[in-house]
Image 1 (cartoon, one colour):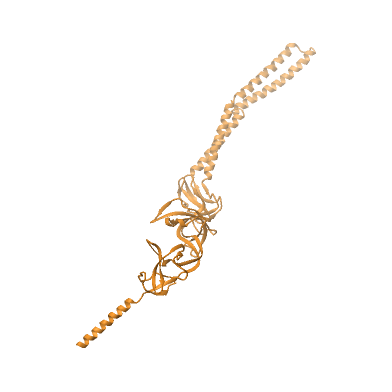
Image 2 (cartoon, one colour):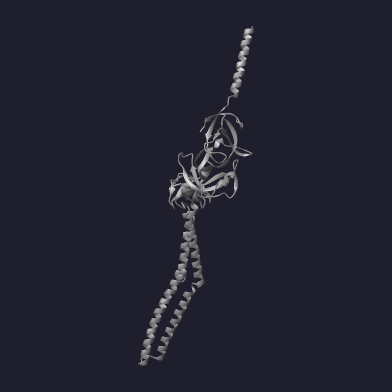
Amino acid sequence: MKKWLVVILVAAALAIGGGLLRKSKPPLVPFARAGRQRLVGTLPTNGKVEPLEWQAVRAESAALVVRVPVHEGDRVAKGAVLAETSDPSLQAGLETAQARVAEARAALNALEQGGRPAEVAEIENSLARARFDLATETREYQALQRLEQKQAATRLEVQTAADKAQALELEIRGLETRRDSLVPAGDVEGARARLAGAEAALALARTRQALSVLHSPLAGVVYQLAVRPGAYLNPGDLVANVGRLDRVRVRVYVDEPLLGRVAKDQPVGITWEALPGKRWEGRVEQMPTSIQTLGTRQVGEVVCTIENPGGELLPGVNVDAEIRTAVAEDAIVIPKEALHHDATGDWVFRLRGDTVEHRPVKTGIGTVTTIQILEGLREGDQVALPSDATLEPGQRVRPVSGG
C-alpha cells in the first residue's frame, strides 16, 4: 500500500513540474524585418461610372412605339433612329394644316387678280368691248374730220362722232374704277397674313410629325434603353440615354478622414469585378464640395476622369478605385498588420534580443498591405506580426520569420 502511494506522489510531482516547465516556455511569435523599397501610397475605395458626355432622348408627345431598331449597348451615329412612334392625331393635324394653306393661297390669288373670277371676267369683257368701240369711233371721228375739211361732211356729224368717242372713254374709266374697287388694299394684306399663319401652322405640324421619329443627338453608345415596340409614351418619358464612353467619369467615394490625402490630378486606377484582370487609368478631376452619407459612411465624392478606349466600362456600374496619393523613394516599410494604434499614437512590438519592446513610430504613406515608417525604426529592425500569443512589453519570445 505504501509502495503505490509513493508512485502516485512521484507521478503527480512530475506532472506539476512538466506543466510549470511548459508554462514558462516563451511563445513562438512571427516577425517581419523593416526594409527599404519604393513605396507608392494608395487609397483604396469604391465608385460609380457615368458618361463624361451624354444626352437623354425623351418623347415630345404622347404616342405608341411602333419600332425600336437599336439595342442596349449599341454604338450609334449622330442622327441615328432610336425609335419610331405613331400618333394618328399628328397625321390628321398635318392634313388639316395643308388644306388651310391651300385655301388661304387660293383666296389670296383671287384677291390679287382683282376679286371673284366671274365678276372680274364680266368687267374685263365689258372693258374689251368698250375699248374696241372706242377705237372704232376714234377712227370714224378722224375720218369725218378729214371729210369736213373737204366739205364732204357736216360739222354736226363730226361733233356727234366726237361725243361718242368721249362717252366710250368715260365708260372705260368707269369700268376700270369698278374693277379696282372690287378688292380693297386691306383685303389683300389680310389674305396674305392669313396665308402666312396657315403656313406657320403647317410647318409646326410637319415638325411635330418629324418628332415622331426619335433620333440620337450625338454619336455614342445607347444605354438605359427604356422602350420597346408596343409601349405607350407620354410627353417627357425617357426613350434612351446616349453617351460617349471613350472617356468616362467615375464618382469615387472617399471617407471623410482620408480626404486630406487626395488632391487634384492624382493618378487613379479602376477595376471592375465583371472584367477581372482589366484596369483603367485616369486622374482626379474635381474635389468634393460637400460631405454626404453613404450607408454607414460619411464620404466626399471625388470626381475622376478615366480613359475607356474600348468602351467596356458601362454607365451605372459599381467599380473599385485606387487613388495613388504619394510616392516615397527608398522608404523604410513594414507590413501594415504589424502596426498598432491607441490613445498614445502608432506603435509596434520591436524585437530586442529575445524580448519585445513597445516602440512608438511615426508613419507616412501606405498601401493596402504596407506602411512607411518615418521615425522609430531602422532598416533591419524586426517587428512582431499578429499571432495567438498575447504580448506585453519586456516579454520573452521565440521569434520566427513571418515575412
